[in-house]
Length: 486
Image (cartoon, rainbow, N blue to C red; front, side, top):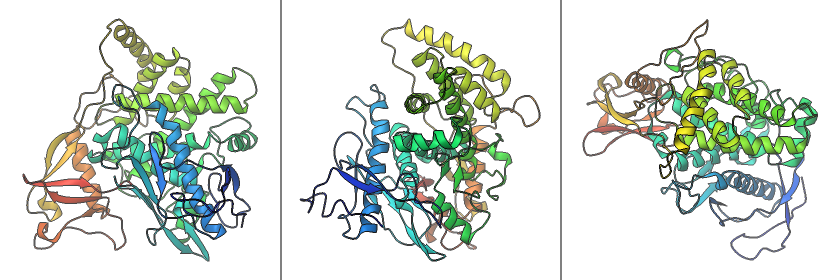
């Protein structure tokens, strides 16, 4: 397949030291694919802030070596994207993973057979599966590796989101992973060049950058034809319009929107890509879009994203508040340079109503001035969730189930758009939490130990379904605990 540029164990002395390794650029591609690995600088493992590692030694065979170094390079590139952006007041010692992870985020590239990958607060876990004559390795796609690393980054920045009982907050976690794959892709000069050629500089168009996890999407379609987009797993270039997830079905074909977090994530990801395209045009200022413009827009977007998520509280209409905080961050960091692009994108996807988008920039500008006039006041960080009880008997549980509901007060008086006209009123946080729990049980996503099942037993789902949550006893009663983000 390719030349092996490195062998041996990175923790020992390599057999041959080389400054470059062969890796996949963004994804191996859907079969039959003509893509070939490219040369990238050998990544440094277990060093610096947000240190990363790959479990085991570098395989001796060419395909295994490419897979190993592809994951290592994507891990390092994604960590390098975010490490300088962690807020100093929240991380005085510098960027760091969630304490449950430890100092080093380690990836296991061969955890068994499945078409999946996940982050579990211990590390990143990837799988393989033989489909239609092709062995698909989820850890062989930089898109997927960056996505899962994005989960770990967001869990470090906003650990309260881990147990938030909200379809919208869970969906934002998935969107953050997909946005991370896009932003990490923009750090590659070779990919930026391809994207300009493919889109003519219009980043909102479908391209290799927006088509995430093409090979895994192909494999999923072989087994469940309607479960992935036609040309990838999820395409950031889309026209999906906001709906309150409480009003959506718990599952649907990829051509439709559901409250399932991966499905609903596409609304925010689509808006973000459109905003990023607008930022590119703002920087180009009427000139042809070039490599440097794409690079700068990607860096600026990553900075705004981190600023926004660390300030947004646990509220029911979470997408809308993040959008408002992005505009605030732009006012603070870039004096409103990108506000028009952000407003247009979030209006287009219904995350902000036209009336909200019109007023939020003025409101954030006033708040910015007030904060700057009050020295010594730290930035307001997003508030935590609150414990609420959900009736457990309807799920075969002996007692009520305590979950973490998004009931914080919204900072901005903004709202998402209604499908026809006007604005949507947010559903109370307690109802958001109850709907989220019901969706999890409908999808068979909750592991229920036998001792917590009543006579007929709690729904356990289809065999092979990944249980993202579990019921546990914290000493005061039953609680819902997240296991993984997949």
